[in-house]
Length: 330
Image (tube, rainbow, N blue to C red; front, side, top):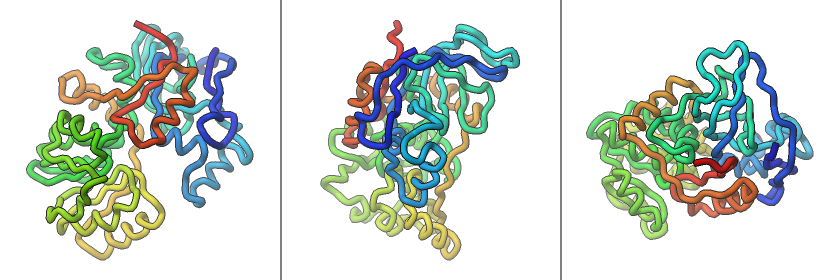
């Protein structure tokens, strides 16, 4: 089968289209013909280990010291059709259209992938009927992260929510969930994304290249920091007493500062990453089928242009999601 192989740690051109063996499902697994995958910021960070030293070292030890060996195909999100099932599988059948996330196992940049029916890391559900395969592939990572953090914050109707980095895969879902929860949503990102964020329901939008959200004289009950780039101190200054600061991409310094603040003040800093549970992904599916949630697709690339897709995502300009069409389909 065709797959984009992760040949080394480094820039996007380390991703190369190759032929590899087609996987065979174990008893508890389903074999999926992958139609669409995505490129997330996490995929790009993993590709060249753009992590703090304390995290990159154990990751290199796990994946491969000099080059990737334990896993050689990236890609965390996917949609496709079940082609075969293991003898112990009960929740899926051949022909089911599905969407899911592989978790840290990666592997979605390939024509076929085997995923466990139940897993502590990945999760798989039947695709929403009212979504294309491209739209569905973009649901799991952004959707599960946004749902996890806003539920951890116990966001209440009438509260003021600010999302910093609201124009990406997590933030675009966060805007919609914030409005569903009844919050007043302020979305922060670059100028070209402002109209999209308004269309998703944001009450206020801020172009961070022209205005500092912390100098507007506003305070917020919940701040959802998706990007984690130099905004922690500014965010804490405009967080209300008893407010909650959500860190989806925590750096080591703010992580320790957040632990101290949570212990010594009436503000809470939440940084625990989401689990992967089919119940949560099915909840997102129900919202989608009810017409209350959608994903935004910025660009689509064929499988052989996965490196180019990584290059684009790393510019920080993507609006919503970037997808990879692994198998052309209707």
